[in-house]
Amino acid sequence: MSHPLLNAFWMMLWFFLWIMWFMLLFRVISDVFGDEALSGWGKAGWTIFVCVLPFLGVFIYLIVRGKQMTQRSMARAQARQDEFDNRVREAAATSGPGGGPGGTGGADELAKLADLKTSGVLSEDEFQQAKQKILA
Image (cartoon, rainbow, N blue to C red; front, side):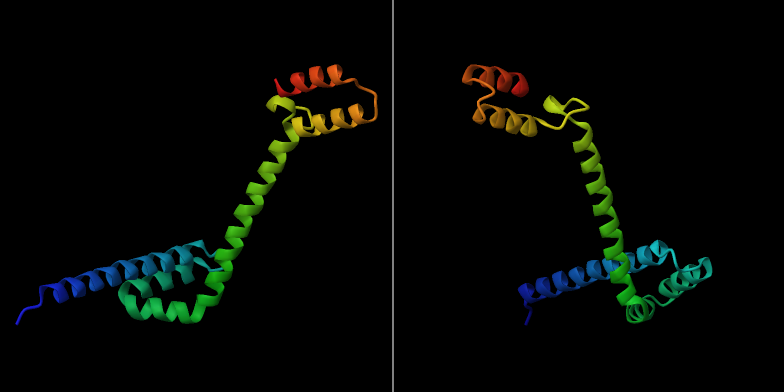
């Protein structure tokens, strides 16, 4: 008795496992080449081991170097985040009102104007004119 739905399920399961296996294999190989502490001979050895005996090589790699694999991944992600944050800080420091260089930003200028208005230095009309210049 044939069960086509069961066969389709098994085929999808094996296909999913096959894709998952390749993702794991590529992840291990990319970690081998991304590890700066591993020598060239070590990289060659792990690559040959993973290519000649893929299942055994990947599982042994995960057992032996799995924890460091996560630490290296986290360190790379943190370095990318720090670099991004520094670029954002630099861009924010060099942009002024209206996006031009050399100012402190439109929000800061508006806050200063509001303080001047509340202290009585600026009238309502002067405040509105200065606000329009900043927002323009």
